[in-house]
Length: 81
Image (tube, rainbow, N blue to C red; front, side, top):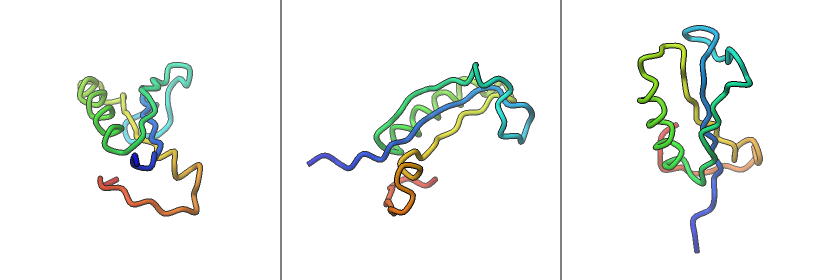
């Protein structure tokens, strides 16, 4: 039986400022993808983050979508958040 899917989304783009969490232009947000677990999402996030390390305003994020879809259920993930 396959592991239970725990949906994670990876997005990123240019922020309005260092330390801010607001995108400069929502039309330019980079939707990297949807992943069935944290480990795969982390690998995608790390690749994008390393590729944009020279731009201090560009940041990528992992969104734990499974928690938004089912906020009352507790999930055990093997990776730190």
